[in-house]
Image 1 (tube, helix red, strand yellow):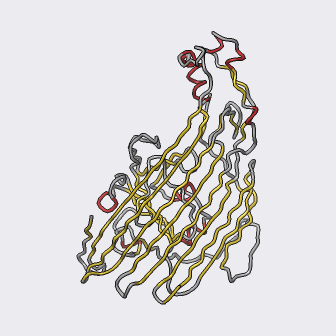
Image 2 (tube, one colour):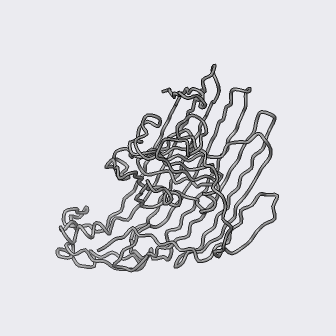
Image 3 (cartoon, rainbow, N blue to C red):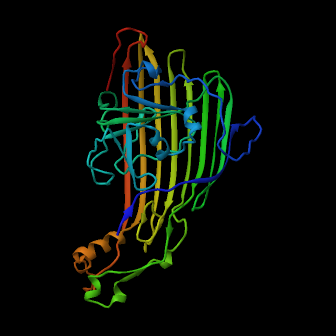
Length: 410
């Protein structure tokens, strides 16, 4: 039996609306069209934790996708943006289960929930969100930029950054005035189902020194893998008991496009300027991602087809509360960040493909007996994984415009 992780996602039709609330609604099909050449915008990053700097002035191996680029490329999920970061590679087993690598460095864990920590650190704003199961598949909307720092970054970013660090920077509350926007999308996947996306934000100044920013999203990713009806007989089992007792049938769970994904989430951030020097920004964010089916196919069944006899699903739910305090003491810039992340992943996975393979090669079913001392066939895995991460950082830096600068903290 052959298995492939090859993924086929072709947009055949797409209707997209993305505009400020004050604008007229735009509905249009999306054929390719010529555009006037435009100049390159300056890309601003905060990779060195010394405030904002032009990407050209940062002496690091770094790639950055700013908000304009993210929107231009229609990037909404992890496996969208990672394809545009040349120094990053990944292996994915489905939404929320991506193992990330940079420069070919691997820790050996490979996404196993009992393995080692990843070698690439993942950050959401100032807080680490690295977990063993895989990178948080945060829906990207109202995002300032994505930064990828190649090479060891442990000095500034701590553990799990031996090979590099990926940072997702959100847009912060803005005191300058009210703003809002939304996006609506409908899409169809070739040889698959239909999907949709609805997202929006609102930025509201509450007073001269306080503003709040609220963001929400709901997304359905269309399925494209078919679970087909198929009977399979375990060969070693059939040598000791009737073949009927050694046969599984996937017909009860047969379904077209059975690997759809539903994602819902929200973010709320508050900015309070205590005075000219000190700012406090508390943030809370959460997301729920429910995925059905699998994201691989069995080449023996056909392209984009598999034959599973047990349900496949995953529920990835997480929330994070964070606090950032920025200010000055004398001529030193001072930043404190603290965060608490709580992630719960419940999953069920059909393991029959592997148990059949083991049975055909090694007579696997003869070694695992049921209560009647008869061979067992078919297997499935239940996963119940919880991750909690608390982080604190206190950082001091000298003025960024000085010729000699330093950053220190704990």
